[in-house]
Length: 168
Image 1 (tube, rainbow, N blue to C red):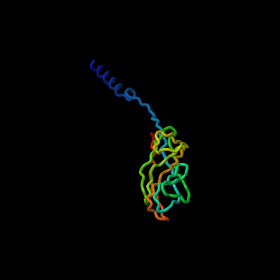
Image 2: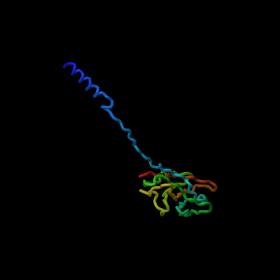
Image 3: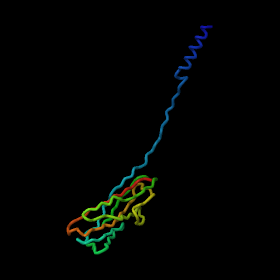
């Protein structure tokens, strides 16, 4: 009887510790896809052209490239170019666009940027939930350039500001 119990115990132990009896494996694949990162490509900076020296004024360039002056300022000549940035990225995620960080240079302070995104009308550069950029959408930018009147003839100014685009 003792021998029979010993044999049963050995057989039970073999069944419990047999790899086939206690484990089975299956491989599982985790699929994940990644959206396209945002990219901004500057096509052109803003150029207002040449204006009257030693004259305080505010010059405005619209997103259509029209330059006007307030006060005694006079636009004289030169190429007028609006800011132009191509925004590319997701085909499904909307974006927010904003401007800031206005930095003066040589007595010229940029302010009140205007934007026209994807062929839309000009307006504030605070654009919430703009259509997804996909392969590329155009952002046209105009701005006011507040001139102090201390600029001598033949000098230039290159004030700056930043455009920020983020996914929602």
